[in-house]
Length: 62
Image (tube, rainbow, N blue to C red; front, side, top):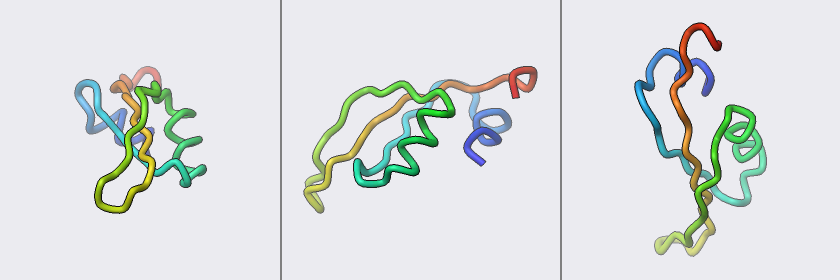
């Protein structure tokens, strides 16, 4: 689904985040070309959040 969104919805770069404990999301984001930007600690629940940047994919690359 993430690949579909990058191909059909996103027009530019997007920022996507996930918990460091959510290994499945981390792997999926990286598999879709997510560039790791760093992490931060959420103030609300003191959880480490990973930040990634994703780029749009043209229909030719899908």
